[in-house]
Length: 207
Image (cartoon, rainbow, N blue to C red; front, side, top):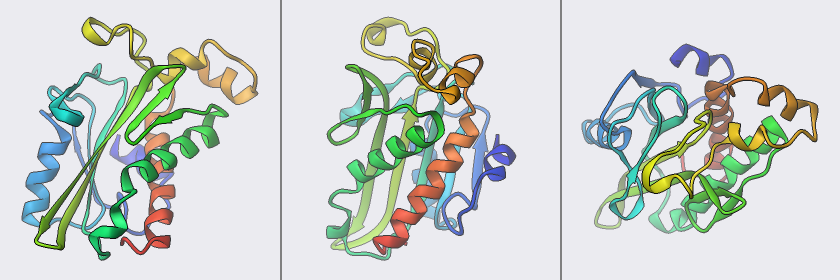
């Protein structure tokens, strides 16, 4: 997974250092431990199987192993904390643009941190800013997106969906039809998001 991400990566900082885990408890918790020890700025912590993913308001993030995107970025911002006031929704916009660019398919943002399609949740963002007084120590950006999962169980059965499910229902463009035939390229989605997010960070003097 790590090498496949790098194929489409065009960044100088974001995801240049990739920490891949076949299975882990939570990328957010692993990233927090790494951030405390001071790792390379822009480090990407990503897993193929997450046992205890974290969502907002202490909710769990459920995801089928090997099917979806689950990662956390570790950022050491050089900006003031006030410049991160809109960071979560700006990240959501970057994801929306990434998916639209790759698949001619537009997600909606449920302010500030949910990605939805026709009322069903496709993804979520968990941002954590750790400070020392007014000084930012580090920023954690946790992202979970349902990509190739085709069945959802339990409490999320009626409220969750995935890109593969929804792309399979439509066929307006050649790209959509091609993508609906098989699994979507998770690594390409991650790389394209990182490319776009780095542009945003540079433009807003975050890194």
